[in-house]
Amino acid sequence: MKLLRVGAPGAERPALLDRDGTTLRDLSGLTADIDAALLADGPALARIRAAADAGELPVLPADGVRVGPPLARVGKVVCIGLNYHDHAAETGAQPPAEPVIFLKAADTVVGPYDTVLVPRGSHKTDWEIELAVVIGRTARYLGEDEDPLAYVAGYTISHDVSEREFQIERGGTWDKGKNCETFNPLGPWLVTADEVPDPQTLRLRLWVNGERRQNGSTADQIFPVREVVRYVSRFMTLYPGDVINTGTPAGVALGQPEPKPYLRAGDVVELEVDALGRQRQEFAQA
Image 1 (tube, rainbow, N blue to C red):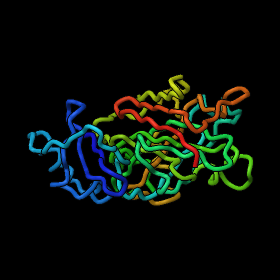
Image 2 (tube, helix red, strand yellow):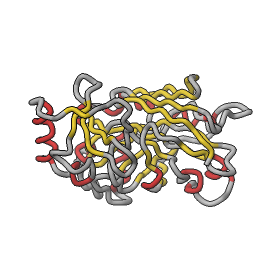
Image 3 (cartoon, rainbow, N blue to C red):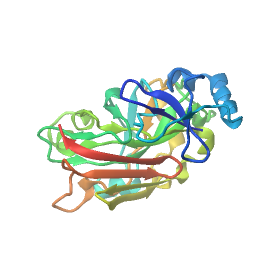
C-alpha cells in the first residue's frame, strides 16, 4: 500500500494512493492518522488493505491538495552518514568500519513539496537524497538470528538537507548543519514493506534546477538496510514511528570541484526513488 497524508500543515488527513497511481482514497473512516499506533496495529492495517481491495474507500479530491509528511508525529530520525562507497570516495573519506550515526530532530520533517529554507548566514546548503526506513515494531538488541526487515513498516524518500559549513567547519558535532528548520522533507508516500521486497535494489536520482546531480543505487550501500536496523537497535531502542535515513550516494555539492554549486534561494530540487515516488522543493531564504 501507498499511504500518505493530505491537507494543510497540522490538519492533514490519512489517505491511500489507489493502484491506478492517481486516485486518492480517504482513510479517515478507518484510522485517525498514519502514525506509530497504526503502524504497530496489524489488524488495522489489514482492514485498510481489505477495504482498498474491495473498492470501499471513498475518493478524495486530489487537485491542488497539499501532500504532507506520510507519517504523523515522527518519533526520532536516526541518520547514517557516509554509507555509500561512492559518496565516501567523493568526500575523501575512508569507508567507515562501523555505521556513522547522528540524529535529526523530528521537527525538521516537512512535506515532500513544501518550501525548504536556506538558513540565515548559510553559504553551503547542500542536497542529499536518501532511502528512509520507517519502523513498525519495537526493536532492541536484535540478534543475528532475527530478521531486521521484519521490524520495518515501510519505506519513503528523505531529503537530508545539510549545511556543510555549520556541519563541518564550526566545531562540535554535525548537529548544527543537520537540524535547521525544514531540513528533512519526507514522502510523498509511506510504501508498505511488502511492496519493497528487496530494499537493496532501488535507484535514487536527484536534480537541481533540472540538472541531474545524483544517480545511485542502494546496492552501493556500505551497510545494507538489514545491518543498519540491527546495528542501530544495539545502541538505542527503535519504536514504531521512528525513521532511519540510510545515507546518500555520490553527487552532493560537497563532492564537486570548486566553486561548489551549493543551494541558494530560488533553486528547485527534485528527487525520485524507484517505487517510492517523487519530491520537489523550492528553496527560499529564511
